Amino acid sequence: MTSDRLLSIEGLRVDLPSRSGSRERRTVIHDVTLSVDDGESVGLVGESGSGKSMTTKATMRLLPPGAKVSGGLTFRGESVLDYSRKELAAYRSRKVSMIYQDPRAHTNPLLTIGDFLVEGVVATGQMSRADALDQACALLVDVGVTDAERRMLQYPHQLSGGLLQRMMIVMALMPSPELILADEPTTALDVTVQSEVMAILAEQIRERSLGMLFITHDLDLAAAVTDTLAVMYAGVIVERGPSDEVYSKPRHPYTAALLKSRPSAVKVERLETIPGRPISAYEAGPGCVFAARCPFATEECREVRPALRQVGGRSVACHRAEDIASELFEGLSA
Amino acid sequence: MTTHLLDVHHLRKVFHVGRAKGRSEELVAVDDVSFSLERNSSLAVVGESGSGKTTTARIIAGLESATGGSIELDGKPLASPDSPRSRRLKAREIQMVFQDPFGSLDPRQKVGACIDELLAAHFDHDKAWRRDRTMELLAQVGLDERHADELPRRLSGGQRQRVAIARALSLEPKLLILDEAVSALDVSVQAQVLNLLSDIRESLDITYLFVSHDLAVVRQISDHCIVMDRGRIVEMGSTESVLDSPAEDYTKQLLDAIPRPGWTPSRRRDLPASV
Image (tube, rainbow over all chains, first blue to last red; front, side, top):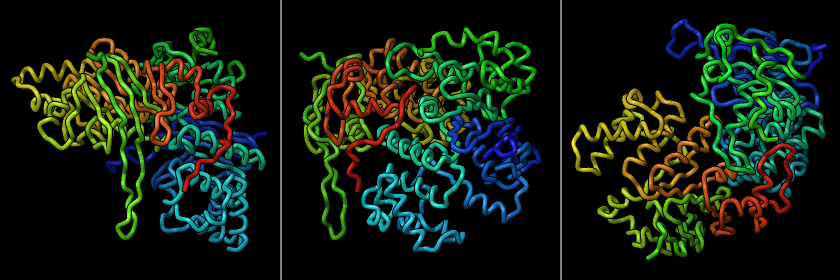
């Protein structure tokens, strides 16, 4: 059943060599299980250090040298971890595209937009330069850039952040990929521009029925634009399920706490905070990664790491998910 | 006698954007901005990037000079930023907390020392007093003695921002300018710092000028707000009335763009005239 999934990640674990050069390794991802189907948008939400960006890097096999990866990572049933060099090149250049947070850091300031957009597809022999230029122009019009031909001759510094992020979307769409990995694509943008860029991205994904893994720290945004939501904390997915349900009825204490600590757009009351600070994956003890900050933690939570299991129509990694359900909803606005 | 702490009259700032061959183009960053701030209130300035909100804050803090207009603090005109004597006095009255807690602290100075330095420069007290005051300030922002001996790199983003706030409070300013002070923080940490800021305002006689693009945060932290667009004030009033029943299209657009349940992103009707 899972074999022909677009992207399927099963029990992914990533250890990186520690910086000091000793043999000791740092775990950056403990256990990530998620999948993306064709035409499905999956939101991966977490705070800094939760390992969400590391998950995308692992998906692209862009981890630093010396990284140890275990678990399953399959694309259309083929194991990405077993790809040969050639297969990997094809996977990265044609099947999966990435959109990064900061378009200015990921464009070459010395190349015109046109050169930048066609560089990848021409270099990998997917199109002739002339065809690629035509397609880039057509895609620019699709994403709402009116004077595409003039834009193609401009340099990144001549474009605003929102416009440049649309160029990144076009660049990602150029090789007609099957999966888009979007790592905080709108975080650096103003809200109105974010709304616009998200609208364009969602429209393009829908029209082409692409799969998308959408990485963000913004739970509100993720809930609004994705079908499935996975909440990550300290290298572990703690809750995964249909976006609207996870958002309206969280079953993991961390998801609930995140929702409560966000200032509301409609009313003012003292924010409920999560004590302490978000920990990194390597700091996690043997038990539940959230145990130290969780008001419901018991001895078992500190000793035994809970696995993802089915609770109320979604997967939750919490020993006490059933006991505390009613307390979690308390104080959450609909 | 006015009850206002701060009065800003017709503030204007023009930047000269360099062009080739000595010609320069004028960019009006702040255009005829006037507002006033009551004592112990909290005013938010919101707008998109390029709206002039940060420039306005920096002029008030004395980090930029205004091209025109005047600013009065406590009914007295703020001196020009060029005179070093007045700068010293002004530091006691206006302090600023910046967005990036990774860039605003000296990486080689311990947390305690960076507060002590300010106290030594501005107060005529002995070392023991400064030590006590440093601890008191750290306690006020939820840190303790152990943190005083740490270098900034050993602290998390939220802790660093607390240090930046403690440092700003050390001079007992009347006005604290917070420029996107919680924008770089994770949601759970942001909530802690927002609560801390409301506690501080309750316990001290302090006034906030809060610059932010995040309207949910603005609602949480401010009584009044100003909406700026391209250097001009487009709307001002109590935060509640501006955010609940905005009169201007621009404010509505900002509000509509906030992600929330059932929200769908939309393309703006008028595309921004970006170069």
